[in-house]
Image (cartoon, rainbow, N blue to C red; front, side, top):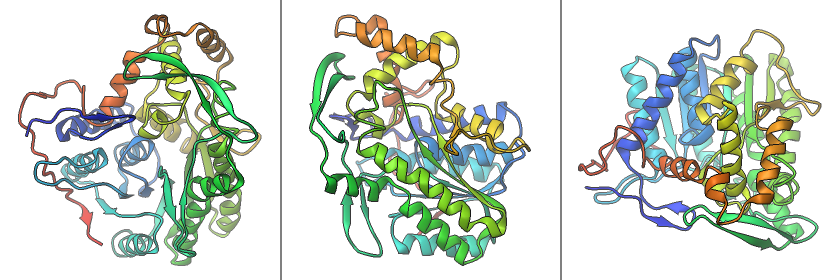
Length: 398
């Protein structure tokens, strides 16, 4: 079938298998070009099919020849209907990994569930014995707690008062004001339940109980802080409260891993175009301005550049891992440079529908967004027939 992007709001309803595959190959080549990392050898990535999770899996596999197991929740293809992009990303990664004689298997299902956890633990026991790195990179708006059976839904709201500021519709380029009502306590609690650290801790507890964590094992979850421009709706909003919980959980997990000399870290990453960030008001405008500044400074990074630097320059240097005053790894250091943020703040004040095409990098934002779904990727013939029925070679059926 000929596959074209079909948009609905902040989501693309189609994805292109060849474009997704080309994206994966490009990330693999980047990691290989940076040289070997004395890193992990047996890795579990929870949330492995897109964004930082996919980049983490690729970096482990092609940076340090690691065997990888990926857990994710993606929609498979149907005849005449494309899969979600994470399905095609995983299919491409596992094909490339097997061609490179690298172990790669995966489990498609609800990572919050006990069933998926048990299946994953059984696979580790059977094939790897133990893992030495666990990446936690889940991004979901909904979580069903397996212990209470309660379904929690997250919200993107400020806390303690309504919020009004600029945003941009990245499809049209129209800059406008947006107002968001304040969250109530129930919405805050639900967001923490979905996006906080409870499930991360459940995963580590389950792995440790079955002796599946190697001596000195690390576990890393991903977070974001961002600038004062976005803090009302992000870091000081419902999501920020969840990230506070996630970051506090790292200390709890580290205490539990002392007997195996293991450690839990939260890595604060850079703002990037993701399906999740595109839905957060204010963030698309901020990212389009940030991209412009960081590209001009020669310090722009995508997901694979961020994660390769995290592994090579932070996690696996052979030295003590550098953290900030709250124990977090700061791989957002280039984004948060004072000169970068000062330039972005100035551009923010000057941004209107008319000025944004020159002040920001909205074209780069749009291109990155479409590439998430396998579109606008170089060296892909989008006029040619594509096979939507792509299988994942290492998929373990539940």
